[in-house]
Every structure is written in C-alpha cells, then in structure tokens.
Length: 288
Image (cartoon, rainbow, N blue to C red):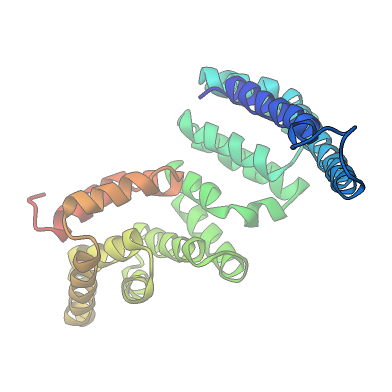
C-alpha cells in the first residue's frame, strides 16, 4: 500500500477513535440529568479519563502529521521507485544540508547499490567517516559489501578486519556472524586460504545463521580443503557435520531457497546469490 494511503487510513482511524472517545459517555445507560450521585461520579470519572486519552491522541496525531509532511517528498519518490531522483534528493539532504542520520545514510547507500554504483558507496563511506564515523559502525555490512562489489578486495579485507571486533561488541549475533563471515570471505578472495579456513570452521560449527553455516561448509569442502592439504580431512569432516546438521534444519532445497529468499532483502546476502545457489545444489546433492 502507498505511503499516502497508509497516512490517510491511519488519520481517519485516529479521527474515528477521537469521536468515539468524546461520545462514549453519552451512550452509557441513563441520562446525565437522571443519574444518581454515584452514577454521576462514575460518569465524570470517564470524562476525566477521556480527556487524558484525548491529550495522548492529540500528541500522536500531531506526530504522525509532522512525520508525514516532513518526509512526503521522500515517500513519494520511494512509491514511484524513481531511484535516480531519490539518490539526488538524499545527496542534497546529506551532502549539502549535512543531515548525516543513520536512516538517510543507509537509504542512500542501499540505493547506490541498487543502481550498481558501488564506488559511490565508498565515497559516501569516506564522507560519513569524516562527519559522523559512528554511522559506519552502526551498519558496516553495506559499506564492506560495496568494496567487494567495487572490486576493492584488499580495501574490503582491511575494512572487515577493522570493524568486525566493534560489531562483535555492539551488534547482535546475526550481524556479528555476518561480519566474521565476510572477513573470512575476503580472505578467500585474496587467496589467504589457511586463515579463511580457520574462520569458516568456527562459523560452520557455531553459527546459528543457516546461510552462514551452509556457505561456510561449502567453501570448506569445495575450495579450501583442496588447497590447504594438511587440513584436507579435518575441514571436510567439519563441513560434513555442518551439512548434516543443516539438512536436519532445512529438510530440502526448497526450504533452503525459501531461507535465501527471505534473507536476500539484506543487500549483503543478495550480493552472495551466486554462492547461495551453488551451496543449495551442493547441500542437497543437485548437479552444479
């Protein structure tokens, strides 16, 4: 549903609620002129309570209107899916007006990636790093992923090395695991197979994220065990155990594909589509 339609529906609902609260006492049994003193006391208590609720309603109604009218251009551009115009609007808000907020920065970064302009995300990262570096730590995956998509693999490796410890402290388990996964993945891309394997073994054994466990076990068996000979059997055994555990959780390839589809709303997952496809085939014995 469109933002404007949601706004109108929500506003109409609030107005209907207001009318109900105002008229409610008049629908109680009896008339205010014939109520006993006890009934009148209850009647007045309802009115007192209603005035408190009406005050809360007024604050909520005002907040909804302020938020909508303040962001109406943003909502309109999103509704129209006019991504180039949305990027220009966000650049004006962030670069020229200095509105470095988490919501606007993340939205601009996401739209750069949507337009396949990963290099612009790196420029955004550099500007944010000067103006408000805490925003990088708040959502590092999108900036690190952009470096990989821009083929700045060494820069991505340095980025994930720098930020993964902070994310381990500040982030939840899923965000932390994805940071460690991407650190291992960038080590794989620069052919540091031994260190990549060490991190993938931990993720294959301990991660609660199905996609991370599956991807890690795939890389261990299909790539890393073949290149780090002294770890060949150990890593294949770890990969096998993770694979069997995952197949108990996700019974078939359709379940895996569904999990991938749900998680791919996050760009750092969508960027791995080639590998999630291969991993799904490998997990359930389909031909590559």
